[in-house]
Amino acid sequence: MGVLNVTPDSFSDGGLYLDAERAVAHGIEMFHHGADVVDVGGESSRPGAEPVSEREELRRVVPVVEALAPYVRVSVDTVKRAVAEAAVDAGATLVNDISASLWPVAAQAGVGWVAMHMQGAPRTMQRDPRYDDVVAEVHGFLSARARAAVEAGVHEVWVDPGIGFGKTASHNLALLHHLPELVAEGFPVLVGTSRKSFLGRLSPGPDGAPSGVEDRLPQSIATATWAMLAGASMVRVHDVASALQAATLVGATRLGP
Image (cartoon, rainbow, N blue to C red; front, side, top):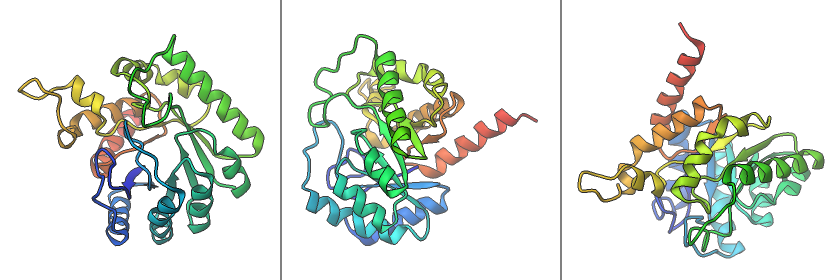
């Protein structure tokens, strides 16, 4: 899954693809680099982000989805029902939902749905995230939401542990370590670690400072590879070509000589 943020303030590519023509060109480029899905988002969910209006999100997202849909499978990254519905009408076939609340839209439209776990909301989620047992709580929440979606008639349900969404670095590492248990629940798992800040803190640069967004490719590929080996069915990435190379090698090791 290639990330395409049509926002001014996303943590990695904010402002790069606000222009619809440039966004579409990048989406097609990701498709040619091997993306199976291009995930279009019009509202930043980075820590501290402020929400945008429904009207503005629609303006950003719908033309890009409509232009990309003939080339590649498109998902829409939104928490707003109206945006999800409009994106589906424009050609999106997957709703990537960090609120884990939009399964009725997916059921009604006959499209896929991703349930992600998030503690709190983007604006405040990283202030002081706490859990009694992060693995049990996240897995239990996702399994319950996934089952509700299936019961509502959604035929394609994904779960995402929400790395970095109301979690400390320790929480993120615990969830990555226990991914096989989430996979064992039976729903396909989507994992997104790409360029996230905890990677920079865990692998600082030569000066001891956390590595910047532009220097987090090795860490991103390492954690994506771990997720794939642990059984994740899809990884959400900014660097599609590099991730595809990692996925090809993971596949080769699974198949053997």
